[in-house]
Length: 337
Image (cartoon, rainbow, N blue to C red):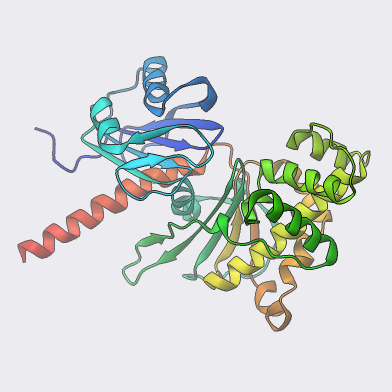
């Protein structure tokens, strides 16, 4: 008979607004297998996407699952922020015939993976000097803006932050940024960091600049804006990308100070890794350090961009299952004593 707390074989998933990534892990020491990526828009529901993955790859039947989902997790019902997918955790668990299903925020999962990342998974944009045991900060522009952090408790356990830091208010530092923020507020009611620091955010910045100049916008996607900016062929695309990096630097500095993230800052998500040379040549670092008396404090903190080929959030989802099992075992031990 299978142990009530068995978590292998396990189904792991990283569900963003654009892509759904899956993997299997048969034993705790095993590497991830059956890695696959699906486009969310091709499926009406998360359940149908998971079942397609299982049908395509025919892994050993999973008994447990952990999924990082790009939205706030506040109970059984989960409704994604940047996708039409919505589901009941209990119903999804039953539909997949799982004994255990853990649903966490996608950046909570990514935060849990940070200690497992090695040199080839990271690109250093500011060396600094990490303080062992100190908090780690995580931010990631993608379809939306994910924000999290990772702390270590007194027993050495990992404690991720499950928050919605991508929706804090975007702050401006100069007259142009004030005008852009006001344009975003007029359009959306609230100018959150995500309205600027995401794939759609880059489009929003470009459109805000066009509106400020009272000129017509072309229907550009984020990759079009980046391409034109790098080719120096469109003034507003150049300005939009510069604003993106400046806002990102300020937001990273705010996050580092808030968390006391002396262990390092990690930039994830799908937007930044493809723009590393432009990032290094931008105002990102100067804006990150622009915190008055705390400039030297921030200078000591290393900053890395996550460039891992395999989604680290899949590793983090597995760690979340391990942490949950460890917590259950600890509670059982205390009750028995």
